[in-house]
Amino acid sequence: MAGLAYDVFLEQGNSRLGKMKTPHGEFNTPVFMPVGTQATVKSVLPSDVWDTGSRIILSNAYHLFIRPGPDTIRAAGGLHPFMNWPGAVLTDSGGFQIMSLGHMVSISDEQAVFRSHVDGSLIRFSPEDSIRAQIAFGADIIMCLDQCIKHPASFDVAKEAMDRTILWACRAREVDLPSTQSLFGIVQGSVYPELRRHCAIELSSMDFPGYAIGGLSVGESKKEFYDILHYTTQYLPENKPRYLMGVGHPLDLVEGVMAGIDMFDCVLPTRNARHGRAFTFRGPVNLKNASFSQDYLPIEEGCDCKACRGFSRSYIRHLFAARESLSWTLLSIHNIRFFQRFMDRVRDCVARGTLASFRAETAEFYPV
RNA sequence: GGAGGGGUACCCAAGCGGCCAAAGGGGGCAGACUGUAAAUCUGUUGGCAGACGCCUUCGCUGGUUCGAAUCCAGCCCUCUCCA
Image 1: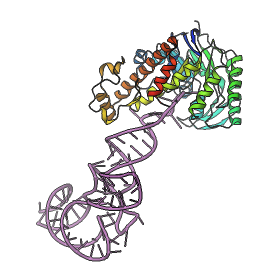
Image 2: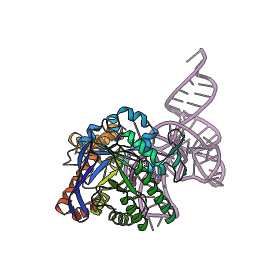
Image 3: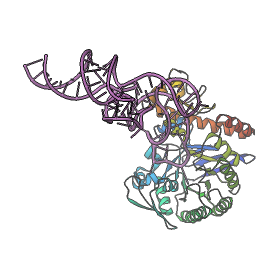
Image 4: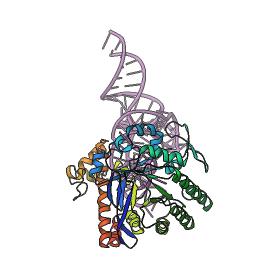
């Protein structure tokens, strides 16, 4: 079976429209991928995720490596049948978790050593381990293990992590992959342009089928974020997909597309949903607020999602007040659908050459 | 009828002479959330005021004291046990 095929069919400034084909279906880019860390987009059935228009989701090698473990998923036939998701899957390598979980014991060029957040056991995780686990999971797109660092970081710390990220990418590239799986490299380098540039050029020379920008939107200023984003993207191959990891806010998605990004993932639609916050084209709305107690309109008028077609703000607010899990489900469906409609709009604007005005509109409702 | 326990803010519950507009929960109100250890975290919750502060509040009514949610007396209401 063929692996990944990516084709840019329209360019507008740095922005582009493309089509990506995977062993589990195709989709238009720029694309938004909902996050399903533990082989589930939290509180939403796969069929409902599909109905939001999502065709690729993200899952996580670190979490699945620890639980249930590669053997269980391999024996199930891979992630797709295991979680009953018909679309494409991208697995993140675990680099972000090794940083964010904070039980790091040591990190060296050889491997990361840390304690499991589940049972405290000592785990050694090399770049090869990450790839082997992701092979077991069978995701269509897999990621190199990278070294993420917290912001702010000194130049020296950032450089060491970037060098290690390149080294690990080299080693990951050496692992034989099934033809159905494609490995992306990840650019690190914190907020330092010369590190970003160096990393992007080095990885590009390894000829990955796609490239990600990691370690952004981790606390740096919006200006630093956008500057590094635009700066880095220009050093990535034009004919390969570019993936901005973990981003983001609606305005960041537009900015990313303007910089030439093709893929995004973010927990915002699902996490915020579980906390009562709805995304709409007129800005965010907190459905837990008392003002919605007798508001019988849908979450967003004109939205075609399953939640908006059958349920009112009043009802969903009630579900939150009563702590019923259906509240998370309905609002997650709406928010994911919002992100997909938002990306529909972004792609349409790229096609029409009106993304700049859409950016201004977005900035009005989702200010920095 | 007798013995004992208790009545504190929206609810539960600490406090038992001044540092008390009153701990801690819950609930309420609001905010945060960017490759998800997130069903999490933060703020706020007597009234008025921008603030110093002022006013009202610990069952009720009186009293002691410079000062009372805290001590005393009477009353009301509750709970447990005995008859």
